[in-house]
Image (cartoon, rainbow, N blue to C red; front, side):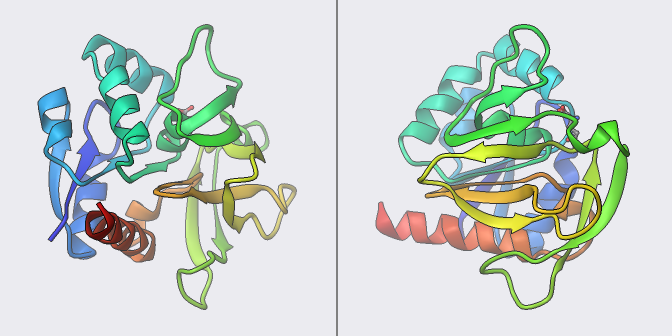
Length: 202
Ligand code: GLN
């Protein structure tokens, strides 16, 4: 059974831990470098990326997170977590840093200018035949991706049709939306499988 950490500096940590356990993983909340060392993979939850970044810096977690991701630790970021895993952001506050890892540009609060929160069906590659009921809360979208990034899902309807909202690059993945809020654990299953495969490969 893989141990999957949930970065617990800020955000909806408990909901991710429950969803991961629903997907058959053991979970550990991660606030310190010693805790990060003990996990096979990491979820970076939704919340507020500016706060998460400031806390990650204050807790001396930015460099340990970057190092583990560079060394091949699987990671999945949802919403603010997607922002944290992006190599480049638009609409950040002055000086806002990310952990990075996914070769993409993410726009903060992108949907929020039109509507703060909404729900929409999003078909996801490799996660079953029925669209995922995606909950977006002041969500980012992906402005652009590099060649190594696989697009797993796009907004299907509304004014933002075609926008990229789910991606994967190797062992890293990210969604604009919050799959931990719906009771549908397909995204967490997909990530837990990715973590299991990474353990076998290493
Ligand atoms: N708007 C938030 C940010 O910029 C993300 C919102 C969320 O995670 N639900 O970090």
